[in-house]
Image 1 (cartoon, rainbow, N blue to C red):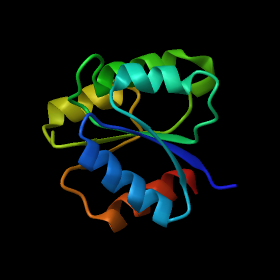
Image 2 (cartoon, rainbow, N blue to C red):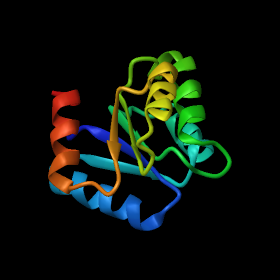
Image 3 (spheres, rainbow, N blue to C red):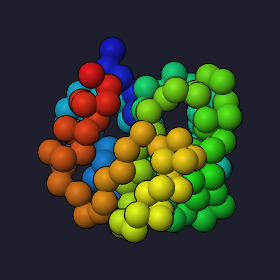
Image 4 (tube, rainbow, N blue to C red):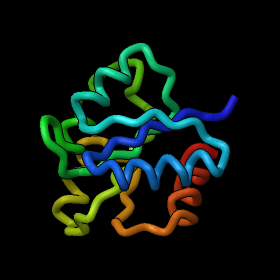
Length: 121
């Protein structure tokens, strides 16, 4: 069984691209449209990694990271920010919240796979 990665983005096209890229590399993918849905799907789920956008309705990526880190079951689950934001202040905020890494959109599929493999081993 492959490792399971949650892709969280309010853009359907970005979720599809991330999902297609990861599935092509042998990973299973669970999708969520925002931080709220992601938290619901994380309850009781065995997810090996979360890849999330920063700017989303209902609960943004930073809020999602903070709430995921507060959950004992996912305290150490790797979380990658995949966003158009590249300012150092946003990266610092993400890191403080508990982000494992940061990828700026647009991204190359091979770049995403390289980061996932590096983090998941």
